[in-house]
Amino acid sequence: MTVDEIQTCTEFQIFDRKSVKIDTKALAIPIIAMANADGGTIAIGVEDDGTLSGILGYQAHVNELLRVSFDYCVPSVKVTPEYVDVIDSKGQQNKIILLHIPQSMLVHANQADEVFYRVGDKSKKLNFEQRMQLLYAKGEHYYEDAPVLNTGISDINVEIVEDYLRQSRYSKGAGRFLRENGFLLEHSDMDGRTSEVLTGAAVLLFGNNPQRYFQRARVRVIRYDGLEERFGREMNVVKDVIFTGAIKELTDKAISFVSTQIKEHSFLGKDGLFQTVPQYPEFCWKELIVNAICHRDYSILGTDIQVKLFDDHMTVESPGVLPGLVRPNNIREIHFSRNPKIAEYMHAYKFVKEFGEGVDRMYRELEQAGNPEPSFKQVEFMVKATMWQHSSEEYGGGTPSDNQLAQGLPRQVKELLLCLEQINLSKKDMLASGKLSCRSRQTLEQQYLKPAIDLGVISMTIPDNPRHPAQKYGLTPLGREVLKNVQ
Image (cartoon, rainbow, N blue to C red):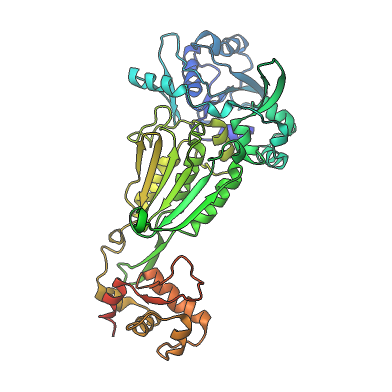
């Protein structure tokens, strides 16, 4: 972090500011809280409002503060201090200390046997039940740091690593970065021979072919025709696409594809004008996908992340249980990274925009857009997150009647409804019918077909393949009702 960022950054899940005058026992609390949650950084010598007071003149107390992680944390926390030169609020040369606290695989307490956990910008004291839940979760969330046998530096895509180093402003080279940050480990086999192997996080983030070692570390997107998943003769899958690759590539491809599948809905507003809104706010559906990729349990090798798109809702299924203290009823307030290295990587690329606050923002944006609250369920070893599209009742004061809808229809859509009144037609047949005021295919597509499809009054006979040579268009049930009121 730059000095300016240290002063102006809002205190949050992984960052806090403390005066050099802070009591040693008081400093132990945020250190313990961060170690138990996602790790973080505490700036010593910076006041809560960002004023640079510095540490010079307090050397004896600074020495005590540097021993807090050993003397007041049980077990001790491995904290790395970094001294930063600054010009303090009095215009004098001074220093501050950045205490870098790693996320720990252990549960830490203070001398009074109190356990704290970082929630937003607060250090929350845990009750007995919460403490036991954290103890249980701590035994599994570090799978990304486990060595992957039979891997080596040759499995790394150096271009991906170097791009990340540029993104995170690390200047020491790819090999040194991988070793210093625990992505490349020494491993001894049964015969005592030592070699370097990659961790799970290294394979998933930087691997040439992550699916060679994690076959189901992929995203599968399925679009269904209708409101529910059906099987056998009634199977209603219209698209089924699987995305693979290293995590950034995987995320980019999945988001790009899903963006083409989010529908838009048009309705008559209070002002009598048509309004068009997407099924779900963009941030919200992206948050569900990114959360699944960040926090899935990669130790579950038999299934992948599935994004299921229905006519009125979407569900993202992610392998694993909710980690740490996170439960469906507190998911807005409690954040815990099962895969902190992957989460930090996603944060660097802005996939994770608000560390620890994305789910709460999703709730707020859904409410503002008129969508129902999302649902989070844990079913055996799968987390299912669902969001529903908005109801037109949230817009314009209620669902417009068929007569209101007909009154507000553009002329071109009215002509198209009358043209399709008796029979389904192809584009060529529509242009040849003499019932439309257009003669070009481009005008037909842009001014007639697109708005009519968006309004839900016509549909394609082969919706999964819009350019199919046998494609035709016909009235929907809504279209037939509206047509009764078209003058």
